[in-house]
Length: 639
Image (tube, rainbow, N blue to C red; front, side):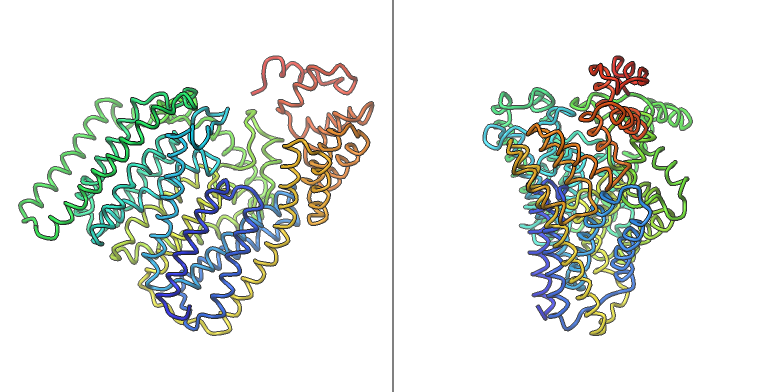
């Protein structure tokens, strides 16, 4: 551990295991995963701080790690005024994962850690995306994974198609970075072989934002690459095989949408062999091209011809764009119409050509309005979900603003937004400064792609995805040419203390969330007595939270104990009077004046609730008196 090579080797193993395990654990979306990852990384960071005798840290590394700590500290302070302390505490527990990841990477990393870190993210991403694509090709062996909201869209194992698509983008860019590098030909060939797999994984998610992020990442990569001419030429060697795989998949329509399932297994088996063949061709092409590159140095004439051909391609693309979409003002008008227009069905591959924002616009407007109401300190961590339900203009359900920047502004105010922005910009500054490092330009492309995508989706809620980006950020910071003075032993003890604090808090969070997860699992298999017991145990670990009491209420109702269920709902309301779920649950189980007041409160907190509308449509009890307009909305279909 004391030697740099040994430390970076440990770091490689830690990153691969952490990212792969978190990826297969539903992307780390579920709270128990946060506790395990934060506890494990916190312990590793503690050991690293105690055993490493030469820990070095640049100013930008200090800004990055300190920014994550400061952001989490400010979020913790905002629990004093948040409207939803339960979700706020959960968000803080998730943020501990990111602190632990950054601290571990800094403590175990060094100047030599850049390539190791990037390789670790690439290997872990390749493992997860390869398994993800295998579920599409072998549903008869690995199971059928389909979501009613987007039938046939690939989302496993991260649990969210846009998150799975973005992980494929990160993996694809890192693979391309290795394939176009000057590393050993066998490594470059292996990376090129995996590229079609990552690309197809992206394709089957039908994630438009991820595809756009891929384009942004490639542009950023080439923009800062000092050897962009050579890189672009190598991309022409690597990419065609990936494009052939994507084009060939378009013919396999049974693998998309509602046609996907056991009936598509034979098509998947056939396509799997074809993709493996294309992967072999890609590897062979890169290996042979690497062999040729080492023995052939193109003349200046060849270089000029190549540059001219690239310029010609760009001019031809511009001419086609103008002929199809008109002049720039006409393009802007068409773009605005496309953004505001309806989207293609979620499971239709044609949606990749649609620019519609779907429900993003009203969600972003709500977050902006929330931020304007509390511009300095924000409305408090975890509060956006309640604000959305109370003020939404469409019936879309969400607990996130689908933008890390807007959500930080809404919940943590200008203070939180500035801290978040400064934290995320630090690695980008380091990458630009270290752009001559052979691994950095592609890593900058990865990081910029993530910064773009996290501005239009809820990547921050998926630790597997965000940790991949943060480890990439740490790789950029380790490559920085800025001096990295050795930390004083007292600073290492401070980092060790941070690891202890993270580990302790993560342990308490893990115990409560583990019991709550066990309660949900017991309820799912119909063991409601065990569900109530586990939820009560979770309530002891989380005395501030309404979540265990909502589970207790549901379990007691399932056991026909109306009195116990009513008391559980009332306890949940005492924990948080702004939770519409608790008020609605109380309304459905109480009677008379209590039902009427509970329904009115629930409706005030969530005016467009489909559940309330359906309840009032079918329930003739007096509790729905005065809510005729709500019943009308149920008949016509809310939102």
